[in-house]
Image (cartoon, rainbow, N blue to C red; front, top):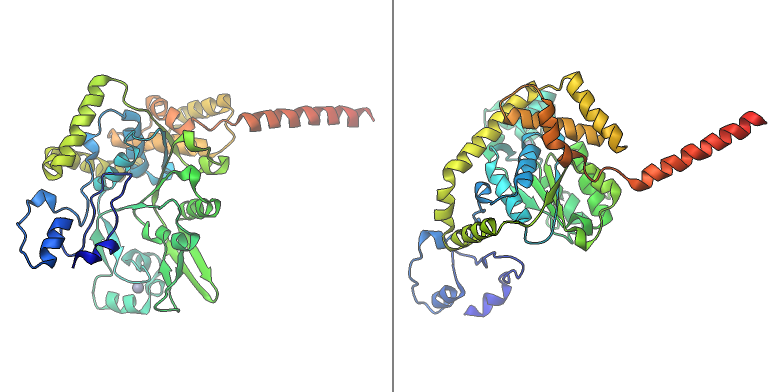
Length: 392
Ligand SMILES: [Zn+2]
Protein backbone atom coordinates (compact mmCIF):
# COMPACT_ATOMS: atom_id res chain seq x y z
CA UNK A 1 0.00 0.00 0.00
CA UNK A 2 1.28 3.50 -0.64
CA UNK A 3 0.83 4.20 3.09
CA UNK A 4 4.63 3.97 3.32
CA UNK A 5 4.90 7.20 1.41
CA UNK A 6 5.05 9.14 4.70
CA UNK A 7 8.51 7.77 5.50
CA UNK A 8 10.06 8.96 2.27
CA UNK A 9 11.97 12.23 2.20
CA UNK A 10 9.73 15.20 1.65
CA UNK A 11 10.41 17.39 -1.38
CA UNK A 12 12.94 20.02 -0.54
CA UNK A 13 11.30 23.41 -0.75
CA UNK A 14 14.55 25.32 -1.13
CA UNK A 15 15.96 23.73 -4.24
CA UNK A 16 15.10 21.75 -7.31
CA UNK A 17 16.22 18.43 -5.87
CA UNK A 18 14.00 15.57 -6.96
CA UNK A 19 12.28 13.42 -4.33
CA UNK A 20 14.40 10.31 -3.93
CA UNK A 21 12.46 7.09 -3.64
CA UNK A 22 13.95 3.71 -2.78
CA UNK A 23 14.05 0.63 -4.95
CA UNK A 24 14.54 2.40 -8.26
CA UNK A 25 11.02 3.84 -8.10
CA UNK A 26 10.85 7.10 -9.96
CA UNK A 27 7.55 8.63 -9.00
CA UNK A 28 4.78 8.37 -6.46
CA UNK A 29 2.51 7.36 -9.32
CA UNK A 30 4.82 4.50 -10.16
CA UNK A 31 5.04 3.49 -6.53
CA UNK A 32 1.26 3.36 -6.34
CA UNK A 33 1.19 1.32 -9.55
CA UNK A 34 3.74 -1.12 -8.18
CA UNK A 35 1.91 -1.45 -4.88
CA UNK A 36 -1.25 -2.23 -6.82
CA UNK A 37 0.63 -4.87 -8.80
CA UNK A 38 0.51 -2.92 -12.09
CA UNK A 39 3.69 -2.89 -14.15
CA UNK A 40 4.87 0.60 -14.91
CA UNK A 41 6.11 1.92 -18.21
CA UNK A 42 9.90 2.07 -18.62
CA UNK A 43 11.33 5.53 -18.16
CA UNK A 44 13.87 7.22 -20.41
CA UNK A 45 17.45 7.17 -19.12
CA UNK A 46 17.63 10.83 -18.15
CA UNK A 47 14.71 10.53 -15.74
CA UNK A 48 16.44 7.82 -13.75
CA UNK A 49 19.14 9.87 -12.08
CA UNK A 50 17.94 9.74 -8.50
CA UNK A 51 20.84 7.70 -7.11
CA UNK A 52 23.35 10.52 -7.69
CA UNK A 53 22.03 13.86 -8.89
CA UNK A 54 23.98 15.13 -11.88
CA UNK A 55 25.73 18.37 -11.00
CA UNK A 56 25.33 21.35 -13.29
CA UNK A 57 28.61 21.58 -15.25
CA UNK A 58 31.14 24.10 -13.97
CA UNK A 59 31.90 25.14 -17.54
CA UNK A 60 28.24 26.03 -18.11
CA UNK A 61 28.08 28.67 -15.38
CA UNK A 62 27.57 32.03 -17.08
CA UNK A 63 29.90 34.90 -16.07
CA UNK A 64 31.12 34.90 -12.44
CA UNK A 65 34.77 34.88 -13.56
CA UNK A 66 36.10 35.78 -10.13
CA UNK A 67 34.19 33.02 -8.37
CA UNK A 68 35.27 30.44 -10.94
CA UNK A 69 38.92 31.53 -10.83
CA UNK A 70 38.96 31.52 -7.02
CA UNK A 71 37.38 28.08 -6.70
CA UNK A 72 39.82 26.61 -9.23
CA UNK A 73 42.83 28.13 -7.43
CA UNK A 74 41.53 26.73 -4.12
CA UNK A 75 41.43 23.18 -5.49
CA UNK A 76 44.70 23.42 -7.42
CA UNK A 77 46.57 24.46 -4.25
CA UNK A 78 45.07 23.49 -0.88
CA UNK A 79 47.66 25.76 0.82
CA UNK A 80 45.53 28.70 -0.40
CA UNK A 81 43.30 27.91 2.58
CA UNK A 82 39.99 27.33 0.84
CA UNK A 83 37.55 30.01 -0.16
CA UNK A 84 34.64 31.96 1.19
CA UNK A 85 31.90 33.08 -1.18
CA UNK A 86 30.08 36.30 -0.34
CA UNK A 87 26.87 37.06 -2.12
CA UNK A 88 23.12 37.31 -2.13
CA UNK A 89 20.88 34.30 -2.62
CA UNK A 90 20.43 32.91 -6.12
CA UNK A 91 23.87 33.88 -7.43
CA UNK A 92 24.96 30.32 -8.34
CA UNK A 93 27.28 29.95 -5.33
CA UNK A 94 26.07 26.48 -4.38
CA UNK A 95 25.80 25.41 -8.03
CA UNK A 96 29.45 26.31 -8.62
CA UNK A 97 30.68 24.49 -5.51
CA UNK A 98 28.67 21.37 -6.38
CA UNK A 99 30.15 21.43 -9.89
CA UNK A 100 33.69 21.71 -8.54
CA UNK A 101 33.93 18.13 -7.23
CA UNK A 102 33.42 16.78 -10.75
CA UNK A 103 36.61 18.49 -11.91
CA UNK A 104 38.97 16.80 -9.48
CA UNK A 105 41.10 13.72 -10.16
CA UNK A 106 40.32 10.53 -8.27
CA UNK A 107 41.88 9.91 -4.86
CA UNK A 108 42.79 6.70 -2.97
CA UNK A 109 40.05 5.78 -0.51
CA UNK A 110 40.67 3.34 2.35
CA UNK A 111 38.73 0.08 2.45
CA UNK A 112 39.23 -0.20 6.22
CA UNK A 113 37.19 1.10 9.16
CA UNK A 114 40.30 2.79 10.57
CA UNK A 115 41.05 4.55 7.31
CA UNK A 116 44.47 2.92 6.71
CA UNK A 117 46.13 3.87 3.41
CA UNK A 118 49.18 2.47 1.58
CA UNK A 119 50.89 5.86 2.09
CA UNK A 120 50.74 5.28 5.88
CA UNK A 121 53.05 2.29 5.41
CA UNK A 122 55.31 4.25 3.07
CA UNK A 123 55.64 6.99 5.69
CA UNK A 124 55.47 5.13 9.00
CA UNK A 125 56.15 1.47 8.27
CA UNK A 126 53.88 -1.53 8.76
CA UNK A 127 52.96 -0.53 12.34
CA UNK A 128 51.27 2.59 11.00
CA UNK A 129 48.26 0.54 9.85
CA UNK A 130 45.86 -1.77 11.69
CA UNK A 131 46.76 -5.52 11.97
CA UNK A 132 44.16 -6.41 9.38
CA UNK A 133 45.60 -3.98 6.83
CA UNK A 134 49.15 -5.11 7.68
CA UNK A 135 48.12 -8.67 6.78
CA UNK A 136 46.42 -7.46 3.58
CA UNK A 137 49.52 -5.50 2.62
CA UNK A 138 51.77 -8.52 3.20
CA UNK A 139 49.50 -10.66 1.05
CA UNK A 140 49.41 -8.08 -1.71
CA UNK A 141 45.73 -7.19 -1.23
CA UNK A 142 44.72 -3.59 -1.90
CA UNK A 143 44.15 -1.32 1.13
CA UNK A 144 42.41 1.36 -0.91
CA UNK A 145 40.50 1.92 -4.12
CA UNK A 146 40.61 4.96 -6.37
CA UNK A 147 37.46 6.95 -5.88
CA UNK A 148 36.11 10.26 -7.10
CA UNK A 149 36.23 13.39 -4.94
CA UNK A 150 32.92 14.14 -3.31
CA UNK A 151 31.29 17.27 -2.10
CA UNK A 152 30.42 16.89 1.57
CA UNK A 153 27.84 19.49 2.57
CA UNK A 154 27.62 20.39 6.23
CA UNK A 155 24.00 20.71 7.36
CA UNK A 156 23.53 24.07 9.06
CA UNK A 157 22.29 22.73 12.39
CA UNK A 158 24.47 19.60 12.55
CA UNK A 159 25.24 18.76 16.21
CA UNK A 160 28.92 18.71 17.22
CA UNK A 161 28.78 14.91 17.68
CA UNK A 162 27.74 14.49 14.05
CA UNK A 163 30.53 16.80 12.93
CA UNK A 164 33.30 15.09 14.94
CA UNK A 165 31.97 11.55 15.43
CA UNK A 166 29.98 9.77 18.13
CA UNK A 167 30.07 6.32 19.81
CA UNK A 168 28.54 3.69 17.54
CA UNK A 169 25.11 2.68 18.86
CA UNK A 170 25.62 -0.89 17.59
CA UNK A 171 29.19 -1.28 18.81
CA UNK A 172 29.94 0.81 21.92
CA UNK A 173 33.68 0.14 21.54
CA UNK A 174 33.87 2.12 18.32
CA UNK A 175 33.37 5.72 17.37
CA UNK A 176 31.44 6.42 14.18
CA UNK A 177 33.12 8.78 11.74
CA UNK A 178 31.86 12.33 11.81
CA UNK A 179 31.32 14.66 8.88
CA UNK A 180 34.90 16.01 9.14
CA UNK A 181 36.36 12.50 8.74
CA UNK A 182 34.02 11.82 5.82
CA UNK A 183 35.24 15.05 4.26
CA UNK A 184 38.84 13.76 4.14
CA UNK A 185 40.24 14.14 0.61
CA UNK A 186 36.95 15.72 -0.39
CA UNK A 187 35.52 19.21 -0.53
CA UNK A 188 33.71 20.36 2.60
CA UNK A 189 31.06 22.93 1.81
CA UNK A 190 29.60 25.02 4.60
CA UNK A 191 26.73 27.11 3.35
CA UNK A 192 25.67 30.01 5.60
CA UNK A 193 28.90 29.71 7.56
CA UNK A 194 28.03 32.95 9.41
CA UNK A 195 25.04 31.21 11.00
CA UNK A 196 27.04 28.21 12.22
CA UNK A 197 27.21 27.25 15.89
CA UNK A 198 30.50 28.58 17.36
CA UNK A 199 31.75 25.20 18.64
CA UNK A 200 31.07 23.58 15.25
CA UNK A 201 32.83 26.38 13.35
CA UNK A 202 35.89 26.10 15.63
CA UNK A 203 36.01 22.32 15.22
CA UNK A 204 35.91 22.62 11.42
CA UNK A 205 38.62 25.26 11.28
CA UNK A 206 40.92 23.33 13.65
CA UNK A 207 40.50 20.11 11.68
CA UNK A 208 41.08 21.97 8.41
CA UNK A 209 44.24 23.63 9.73
CA UNK A 210 45.77 20.48 11.22
CA UNK A 211 44.66 17.92 8.63
CA UNK A 212 43.53 15.58 11.40
CA UNK A 213 41.54 15.65 14.62
CA UNK A 214 40.88 13.50 17.66
CA UNK A 215 37.52 12.62 19.20
CA UNK A 216 37.34 11.61 22.86
CA UNK A 217 34.15 10.19 24.33
CA UNK A 218 34.66 8.67 27.80
CA UNK A 219 37.30 5.94 27.50
CA UNK A 220 37.12 5.98 23.70
CA UNK A 221 39.38 8.03 21.48
CA UNK A 222 39.88 8.05 17.73
CA UNK A 223 42.01 10.18 15.42
CA UNK A 224 40.88 10.89 11.88
CA UNK A 225 42.42 12.44 8.82
CA UNK A 226 40.71 15.61 7.73
CA UNK A 227 42.49 16.91 4.64
CA UNK A 228 39.81 18.78 2.78
CA UNK A 229 39.32 21.91 0.76
CA UNK A 230 37.04 24.11 2.83
CA UNK A 231 34.56 26.23 0.93
CA UNK A 232 32.18 28.45 2.85
CA UNK A 233 29.46 30.71 1.65
CA UNK A 234 27.49 33.44 3.28
CA UNK A 235 24.96 36.11 2.54
CA UNK A 236 26.19 39.24 4.37
CA UNK A 237 22.56 40.40 4.71
CA UNK A 238 21.95 37.53 7.13
CA UNK A 239 24.62 38.30 9.69
CA UNK A 240 28.33 38.97 10.13
CA UNK A 241 31.07 36.40 10.48
CA UNK A 242 33.28 36.38 13.58
CA UNK A 243 36.64 37.96 12.61
CA UNK A 244 38.66 34.93 13.75
CA UNK A 245 36.63 32.70 11.41
CA UNK A 246 36.86 35.11 8.51
CA UNK A 247 40.65 35.24 8.96
CA UNK A 248 40.94 31.47 8.49
CA UNK A 249 39.45 31.46 5.00
CA UNK A 250 42.00 31.97 2.26
CA UNK A 251 40.25 33.51 -0.73
CA UNK A 252 37.30 35.87 -0.40
CA UNK A 253 35.17 35.70 -3.50
CA UNK A 254 32.63 38.37 -4.16
CA UNK A 255 29.68 36.90 -6.05
CA UNK A 256 27.29 39.37 -7.60
CA UNK A 257 24.15 38.73 -9.58
CA UNK A 258 24.69 38.87 -13.34
CA UNK A 259 24.45 42.47 -14.53
CA UNK A 260 23.83 42.19 -18.25
CA UNK A 261 20.36 41.17 -19.48
CA UNK A 262 21.93 38.99 -22.21
CA UNK A 263 23.92 37.07 -19.59
CA UNK A 264 20.87 36.61 -17.41
CA UNK A 265 18.90 35.27 -20.37
CA UNK A 266 21.69 32.84 -21.24
CA UNK A 267 21.90 31.69 -17.60
CA UNK A 268 18.13 31.11 -17.58
CA UNK A 269 18.28 29.13 -20.85
CA UNK A 270 21.07 26.91 -19.57
CA UNK A 271 19.33 26.31 -16.23
CA UNK A 272 16.19 25.31 -18.11
CA UNK A 273 18.04 23.02 -20.54
CA UNK A 274 19.78 21.35 -17.59
CA UNK A 275 16.51 20.90 -15.70
CA UNK A 276 14.70 19.41 -18.66
CA UNK A 277 17.42 17.12 -20.06
CA UNK A 278 20.30 16.91 -17.58
CA UNK A 279 22.23 14.16 -19.38
CA UNK A 280 22.04 15.84 -22.75
CA UNK A 281 23.08 19.10 -21.15
CA UNK A 282 26.07 17.50 -19.45
CA UNK A 283 27.06 15.83 -22.72
CA UNK A 284 27.13 19.25 -24.38
CA UNK A 285 29.79 20.37 -21.88
CA UNK A 286 31.62 17.04 -21.62
CA UNK A 287 34.57 18.17 -23.69
CA UNK A 288 35.07 21.41 -21.76
CA UNK A 289 34.67 19.56 -18.47
CA UNK A 290 37.32 17.02 -19.48
CA UNK A 291 39.69 19.81 -20.57
CA UNK A 292 39.23 21.64 -17.25
CA UNK A 293 39.85 18.42 -15.34
CA UNK A 294 43.08 17.81 -17.27
CA UNK A 295 44.24 21.41 -16.67
CA UNK A 296 43.66 21.12 -12.93
CA UNK A 297 45.56 17.84 -12.85
CA UNK A 298 48.51 19.35 -14.75
CA UNK A 299 48.52 22.47 -12.60
CA UNK A 300 48.62 20.37 -9.43
CA UNK A 301 51.56 18.38 -10.78
CA UNK A 302 53.42 21.56 -11.74
CA UNK A 303 52.71 23.38 -8.47
CA UNK A 304 55.69 22.07 -6.43
CA UNK A 305 58.06 23.63 -8.99
CA UNK A 306 56.46 27.08 -8.92
CA UNK A 307 58.49 29.69 -7.05
CA UNK A 308 58.01 33.30 -5.93
CA UNK A 309 61.11 35.44 -6.50
CA UNK A 310 62.11 37.84 -3.68
CA UNK A 311 61.38 40.99 -5.70
CA UNK A 312 57.89 39.72 -6.61
CA UNK A 313 57.23 38.78 -2.98
CA UNK A 314 58.40 42.23 -1.90
CA UNK A 315 55.71 43.82 -4.06
CA UNK A 316 52.98 41.77 -2.35
CA UNK A 317 54.36 42.52 1.12
CA UNK A 318 54.39 46.22 0.28
CA UNK A 319 50.66 46.12 -0.59
CA UNK A 320 49.92 44.28 2.66
CA UNK A 321 51.84 46.88 4.68
CA UNK A 322 50.05 49.75 2.96
CA UNK A 323 46.67 48.09 3.53
CA UNK A 324 47.51 47.68 7.23
CA UNK A 325 46.70 43.97 7.32
CA UNK A 326 47.91 42.31 10.54
CA UNK A 327 47.25 38.61 9.76
CA UNK A 328 50.12 36.56 8.34
CA UNK A 329 47.50 34.52 6.51
CA UNK A 330 47.19 37.40 4.03
CA UNK A 331 50.57 36.76 2.42
CA UNK A 332 50.23 32.99 2.66
CA UNK A 333 47.02 33.13 0.64
CA UNK A 334 48.35 35.83 -1.71
CA UNK A 335 51.51 33.91 -2.61
CA UNK A 336 49.90 30.47 -2.68
CA UNK A 337 47.05 31.67 -4.91
CA UNK A 338 49.58 33.35 -7.22
CA UNK A 339 51.55 30.08 -7.38
CA UNK A 340 48.38 28.20 -8.32
CA UNK A 341 47.65 30.87 -10.93
CA UNK A 342 51.12 30.49 -12.46
CA UNK A 343 50.87 26.68 -12.38
CA UNK A 344 47.48 26.83 -14.15
CA UNK A 345 49.10 29.02 -16.78
CA UNK A 346 51.90 26.51 -17.38
CA UNK A 347 54.65 28.59 -15.71
CA UNK A 348 57.05 27.90 -12.85
CA UNK A 349 57.62 31.53 -11.76
CA UNK A 350 55.07 33.86 -10.21
CA UNK A 351 54.87 37.20 -12.03
CA UNK A 352 53.68 40.56 -10.65
CA UNK A 353 50.59 40.09 -12.86
CA UNK A 354 49.74 36.82 -11.08
CA UNK A 355 49.90 38.73 -7.79
CA UNK A 356 47.76 41.56 -9.17
CA UNK A 357 45.10 39.17 -10.40
CA UNK A 358 44.71 37.29 -7.12
CA UNK A 359 45.37 40.17 -4.70
CA UNK A 360 41.75 41.36 -4.40
CA UNK A 361 40.63 37.77 -3.73
CA UNK A 362 43.31 37.20 -1.09
CA UNK A 363 43.45 40.59 0.63
CA UNK A 364 39.91 41.96 0.82
CA UNK A 365 38.12 41.94 4.18
CA UNK A 366 41.48 41.61 5.92
CA UNK A 367 41.92 45.12 7.23
CA UNK A 368 40.33 45.67 10.63
CA UNK A 369 39.46 49.31 11.37
CA UNK A 370 39.01 48.32 15.01
CA UNK A 371 42.46 46.74 15.31
CA UNK A 372 44.09 49.66 13.48
CA UNK A 373 42.54 52.24 15.82
CA UNK A 374 43.25 50.05 18.84
CA UNK A 375 46.92 49.83 17.80
CA UNK A 376 47.08 53.65 17.38
CA UNK A 377 45.59 54.17 20.86
CA UNK A 378 48.17 51.78 22.36
CA UNK A 379 51.01 53.57 20.55
CA UNK A 380 49.78 56.97 21.78
CA UNK A 381 49.45 55.68 25.32
CA UNK A 382 52.92 54.11 25.24
CA UNK A 383 54.37 57.40 23.98
CA UNK A 384 52.71 59.28 26.88
CA UNK A 385 53.88 56.65 29.33
CA UNK A 386 57.40 56.88 27.94
CA UNK A 387 57.49 60.68 28.42
CA UNK A 388 56.24 60.46 32.00
CA UNK A 389 58.69 57.71 32.90
CA UNK A 390 61.60 59.57 31.30
CA UNK A 391 60.68 62.83 33.08
CA UNK A 392 60.56 61.22 36.54
ZN1 LIG B 1 43.23 -0.77 8.47
